[in-house]
Image (spheres, rainbow, N blue to C red):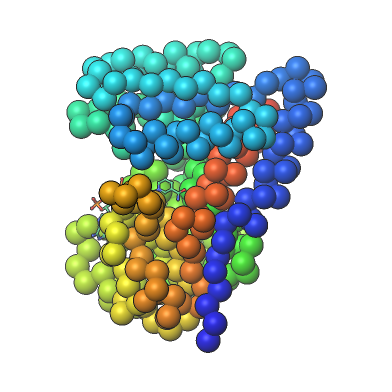
Length: 288
Ligand code: NAP
């Protein structure tokens, strides 16, 4: 059995093209789509993730603002900054990079985000819309996983999908999206996390395993059944600066029918989905 490599670039490229054309039109009409990122970390991996977002925006003609706060700054400064960006008419979209420093609550941030600019879908209104299947924004990573599965014709309806990770930014929104009674949904979803006992029993029975645990080496081939589709969302920095996922690629690839590389799998599609969300915010095509 040959294993298909689920590469992200071929999926991301046409999205970039469409977004760049749309941005060009908007700019000609006098609208400059603008994303503001907020980073409260001096970790080089987090800085790198933010820089990639700015580079991708620049590639498609989207303007950016780069707000950085010291990790030991008071949480109130971050909250005020998020509120200020919500009120700034020249900013269409706001993205707060996680993880946040200890003592700064994501709940504090999410309530202060302007929902129509909340492209990563953290505000309670946007979370509710996503769960209801009527979103203004599908978070970029969730959208990326679904776009990859669709682009490579991986059947999702009726599939047994195990999502490893229950974070508010990846695991929970992805699980909810896969449950929608709509195209790209209708999966039977199990969400695993650090308190799950016997993770392998869940991954072995899955048709599709999606890992987003931030735990290198967590899943290897012995935890998979032959023919499983494996999507590794994680991007864990190695001490040498390289990036690895949660999955031991070589052993998993021996069992999987299809698998994402890390890097080069979910990541490029996530960036494309983010710029798509920025255009959505800038054009206020929010449904209602
Ligand atoms: P997070 O907030 O730390 O959440 C990790 C989740 O994984 C938690 O739910 C945690 O369980 C669970 N987990 C941790 N260790 C586990 C284990 N040994 N067994 C089972 N579950 C375990 O991380 P995140 O923000 O969701 O990010 C996850 C990964 O995705 C990171 O590597 C990040 O860099 C990457 N990422 C990738 C993209 C992309 O586009 N590819 C975008 C954003 C982030 P508990 O809830 O019990 O603690």
